[in-house]
Length: 91
Figure 1 (cartoon, rainbow, N blue to C red):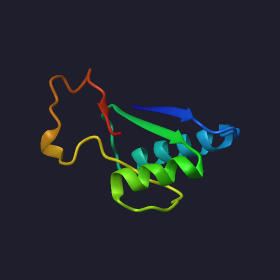
Figure 2 (cartoon, rainbow, N blue to C red):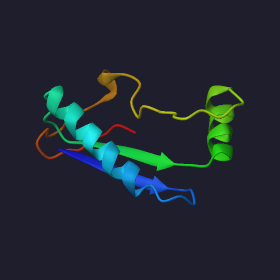
Figure 3 (cartoon, rainbow, N blue to C red):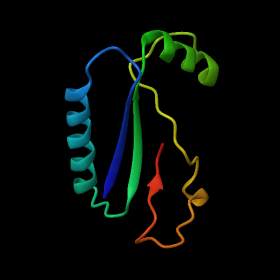
Figure 4 (spheres, rainbow, N blue to C red):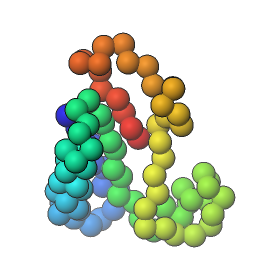
């Protein structure tokens, strides 16, 4: 199971991207035979905002198309108390 949270901080309609991203994630989980519960957050931001994020967190003062952050740096950080009930948030 996959729960995708979409946040659009731009003035553009991202509905088509939401649908495409959902299809891609679902297919990837199927191909990789992932059957645990996961949550992914996808945030659409302006060029200025992504440049600010790059500068602040990566020390790179430029615009990029995509940036990703893992919620956990290492799988050892993930604790499953009840694998059937818990949702692991990926970022």
